[in-house]
Amino acid sequence: MDLSITVNGITFPNPFLLGSGPPGTNARVIAKSYDAGWGGAVAKTISLESAKVVNVVPRYGKLRSRTSGEVIGFENIELISDRPIDVWLEEFRQVKKDYPKHILIASIMEEYEKSRWQELTRMVQDTGVDAFELNFSCPHGMTERRMGSEMGEHPDLCEEVTSWVTEVSNIPVWAKMTPNITNIKEPSLAAVRGGAVGISAINTILSVIGVDLNTLRPMPTVEGHTVPGGYSSQAVRPIALRMVSQLALGLPQDVSISGIGGIENSHDALEFFLLGSSTVQLCTGVMLHGVKMIDELKEGLEKFMVDKGFNSVQEIVGKSLGYFSTLMDQVHKMKAAKRTKAGEASRDNEWAQKDITEKTAELTSN
Ligand SMILES: Cc1cc2nc3c(=O)[nH]c(=O)nc-3n(C[C@H](O)[C@H](O)[C@H](O)COP(=O)(O)O)c2cc1C
Image (cartoon, rainbow, N blue to C red):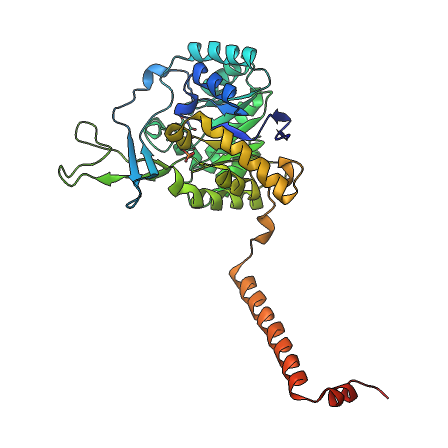
């Protein structure tokens, strides 16, 4: 069955992408995911100077179900890629040469300086990647250098930085937004004003995964101390779905949405398509379950399309958006339904209480 979808002029073999993070940490793992059947990958975020990026260990923390032990929430304090830009450029070239039909999206991030953003954009675009994803959303670490969500929390910065990139880019530009903000539509619309044709949402939610009751240290603990990190995995999915639906209802129709947050199977992914995502990205799910999960994702999507009579993935996109309303409207609808029901009941009563001949006479004109 054809699961392809064309988004911003790019044809994805299927709508399932690796999200930026460990699943797209180098060319080898990206190639492996394409071999496994993924439609595309957003590589780990890169910047001009990898030497400035120093990751700590441990940098992950898990929240488990009290009953089954299953991981339902995941915190990370990981930064962007610490691999040199030259290595990345060579790998992007190689991946596009070996897998011309698979989609490769470069996630980029820089300090608040036009020349840096434009230099990075030019260098990366020369490798033949299919699109850019601007990381306006990493919630920890990079913010100390005014990068990541430090930009995504300020619509004016989102617009300005996006316009720097689109000024020199000739491939589609998506902006990846932070959920750590009251109204995700505002910075997203600003990025669109700056020339973004797609919005990716959501990045991680600021969190503290727990406190060790023996040592009294909040976790994850590095040399006795912690910083709040980014929360992902199943627990964030309802928040991501809400934000994706708000974007789908509030952005111009031609802006695409790549849905992210807590997706682990085809059921989860379908919810994102129905609420307006044309593609979906998985990060923590792949870290926990491996790239083979693509088999179930594709099989589940195919089965749904057959069962419900959809001929293309595009037909599913946004299909459930019409069912959002306001509380006031729901109250009106409920009252109207009650009145109709009451009307039907009283008619039934009348028929039951009267003799049929009497009722016939009542309804006859002559
Ligand atoms: C360990 C880890 C590292 C991540 N690194 C990046 C990154 O470099 N760039 C980025 O845009 N998002 C990064 N993310 C965020 C994910 O791409 C994704 O937006 C988020 O985790 C929610 O999706 P999920 O529940 O499928 O993981 C990272 C997430 C995790 C868990």
